[in-house]
Length: 537
Image 1 (cartoon, one colour):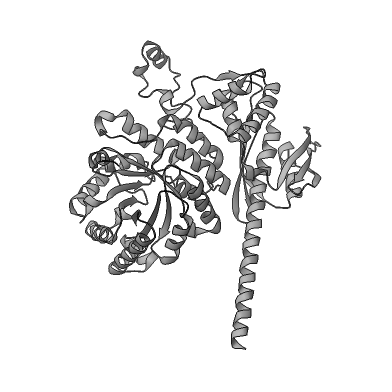
Image 2 (cartoon, helix red, strand yellow):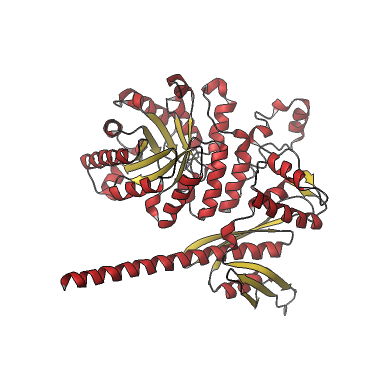
């Protein structure tokens, strides 16, 4: 058990990538992707993992339930509003977790009270206290958040927090929900809360900062300086609107500036790079090259002056070692004559430890790639390791692709595809388009039977050389919803087709779930109607 002194010297890292991060537009993940990220976060050794919002949808409930049962190590948290239905759903979803937390919230700022909740001060406090008491009956570890806390009257915020602590809350979270605060203001607010909240010595104070003005990390660190001992953050800073505080930046700031903060956290920093790349792959959002800590340029030096200084002494221009965050130092790794053991060791060095079944897939893909490439790079291996989502292969798989491309006024690009359905039958279709990629997309759409428009399409190299693998990312809008797809191949047209099919598969699965849920609801309504008729009779 930790001593009180250890609690004061240690920052609890609360990762909300699976909840707040996944809420960001265009960043949605399938259940299997969420589970994959959850295991990576556990390996990263975050203290608390907010797995989702169980009451939001059946899919969210199942994801939280599966993570709670399968993922070991961190405390698993579930978000819930201060009402009985949300809290009961959170408790059911968390049943399988060894360590669980219910995170309940209600808005407290004047603008939220008046326009969103339509409640007065007393009603908000009453709902908050009732919510915490109910949560406490279901789970011993209860976190309470005052949504839009920074824009709440300080004296009222103190009143709310004092009341929920008395009701049983163990963590008090102070969100800057709209990213409006400055570091000086955050520091002053946390200092006042520590002085004036009744029972504050019994709880952990937490900071949850958004990045609308680009100050989420600075505000989180200011809160830490003023006594916060939990920071709520996400991988790559992903989150609503401009995002949240970036986990990797908070962790490395505390570690690199140890003489300033004199604090530590339990995160396995050498896994930061790999986890960042995994999250980027799952969401289809590339990490900016100039991203702090984990961007491609974080440890790159082009200026002659900088290079001279680096050659003389690394510390002239680097305040962290690349290997401290798991950044791969070597590019060239393996070739077609390399064996399974060498591949496993190299994957381990760049942050991947696949199970046997997954290793079989990666090794087969590696051998096929090595036959087409003279040299295989770390980035190639990373693409192979990240490129498999079991759900992405359902219900359609690309078995064949032929392209006829031409230029000129009368040129008509044609694509033909062969797609195999999960039930075993194969469908072949052809289409013309504005170019070979467009033709391939049209042919795939004909087979899948979903009409969607491409709203974003990007292709980039994931390694060096003329035989480099290309990664295609496609975002498709269908029936008013956005679906992301990703494909990797040494042939960029094939990569594009795989990415588009990935997006179409996601759309097909989504619409199938909606149809199934509507069928269940219709059947339930029919049963209710029959029961009512029987009761009247």
